[in-house]
Length: 92
Image (cartoon, rainbow, N blue to C red):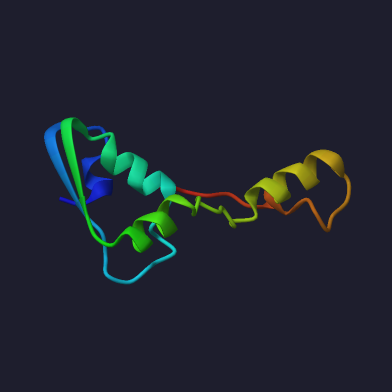
């Protein structure tokens, strides 16, 4: 089972198998999620170097939504930054 699929669940014991190569997807938040799934015992299998790289990396959001929303709030009449008001989204 993947870490993401385990969110919201809890297990007596958890084995976290780290990849052999570092990845930008391997973050402190992902390790935290994996470790907190365990009620009693967690075993992390992998190199110390990969583990340390993961816990030193945090998620970096780059969608631009924060900037877009704040620019709209600061410049409500500026058409160059009011893009959020001209978009609609449908989920379904």
